Image 1 (spheres, rainbow, N blue to C red):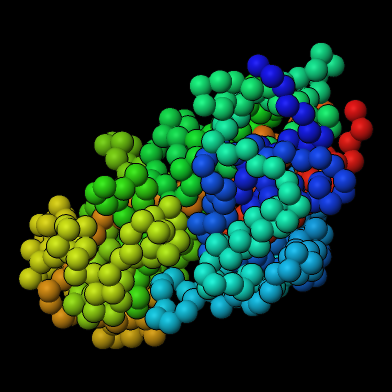
Image 2: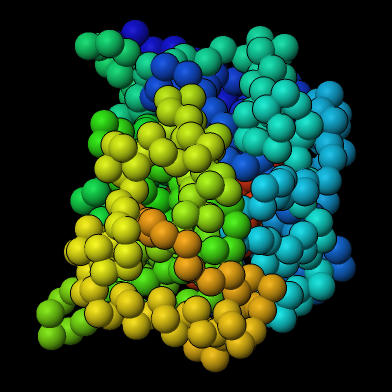
Length: 481
């Protein structure tokens, strides 16, 4: 094995990795990026591309502290808020055009997110400002942000070694991380770091065993195919403490034939309901946070050990079917591989969407109790007629009855945008050992060991990737072992 050498080795070439590499290179460090896949981008390229802004420092810290439920160190939260104020000017300094993110273009997809905090009634929510995005050809998508970041990596001539999965970290006898072993084809190569290694190689959303161990059930994946927990294993092998391992950002997705990933579920209008395996509604369908499905479906029936909301089902009628696609294939791992039709007809023909001339026939097609589904739809339609949803408080403006046959439905599976867990880090992006001490020469950024915990707010990961990517790149470049 012939060693290669650089000042800073970045493992993983997504948003956090590119940001860390650019920052370290601009400070004079020689940087090498090692990427498992044949191309970069990770979940950044597959995302909606939104970046959060914050207002009053104390209020923003209070809000994020509430969301994290005490599971994230206060100084890490403070570092995020403080550093995030530089996200917009930094993106502009790279040549990006930064604009307000409208979040939803017509036709509206449900649920509808506010421009500030996802839940305005939560403590400190007024400390959360509007979302931003980089404007580009892809239109409100992470591909625009990724084009800006990757273009700047190329401009700086930072080398990227693709198709080179990192296998394990190397440590000096004094305990400092000073390199790694990566695979290149059939060979293993030693890559030495004069200053530091930065882990930015994503979570474990593609590793089903980790899903079972840390979350108790299997999820579909909407994210990057290379996110199989490699960074978690390497960090643990180097003695790192882990945190937030059961924290995820998950939405509803479809499982479809021929794809190894899920497809994002999104509705073109309010004419739909969600039901569980008992054919009962369980949520205000138009106001639920689409990132919080992981929490929504964790209920377990102890007698049967069955999760009654896995899968859940979406039910709609002909009017909604004609209103637009019931999926978003512009984002997620399916983007570029399949485009959902405007009228959903091909997907009905494929059997991805089930249909019935009446609600009883649809129930049979979905494997639900026909009488129970009929009662649920009848009660929902009565709520629409009365303009009041006594069960879940759905806004009267969204109470559109299901009346026009044929009727349609599809199974909805909890599907991961990403996981948050991984090596615990401090406010300087240093990875900590089991005793809370920094492991010399090892830094982390991005969703691997993310600071987000119990309640993930949309756009939080990209915000963190930029902020902690710069923190990690700055401190790694400044290290003089």
